[in-house]
Image (cartoon, rainbow, N blue to C red; front, side, top):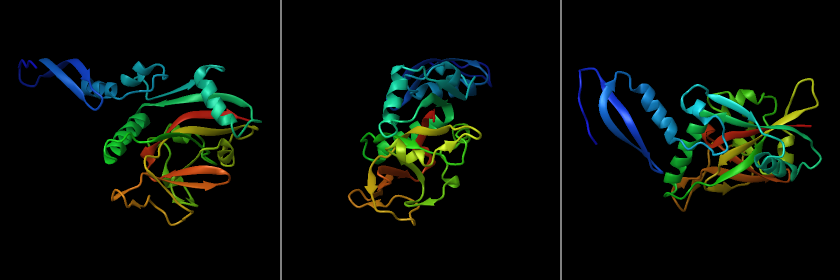
Length: 250
């Protein structure tokens, strides 16, 4: 690394970025610009691995856009993947559209949590599941436009306490789907959820966090249960779920 000092008050001009799987190494050459905040922010954004299917990523990296909603083309591989999973338990429903949610801030928080859970579990990659979620009376945009995403603050005490609830079966989440006012249309999310190491528990409304894992001395990352003919997973942290897709159907 070469460092060349110039006039007082001037700061480094970052010329090169070398990204590794866990860190970002900066090569700093020369001191030219007075404000480095914009450059550092851009570098940290580039260090985040956005999903390969996301479009207009440069707008997210540069901060031109914080949120991009992208409607999937009918029949595309991505559309078909979500459609097939949804139709497994909802074969009679008609999907109107599927939208990909690209929220830069929520994704960064989610990725950081994924790294933290991986480190907590001795570098064993945290288990991720694609699970359904119905937001009941909460409009979906209040989730994907917010700073918290799925927010436990607005959750009721359910069968496994106060948590964000997600289901394997779309049919289960259909009971909690958001109903678009004035239309015979419903909406639900397909979310990416960090379940990590989970505890299988019977219903317990007193839960506020996962129990202790006796084999590791650390708390489980989530709780799994079964109700209404579906496995369900509960996470007790907003950071452990990301609203990947919004499915509009009737």
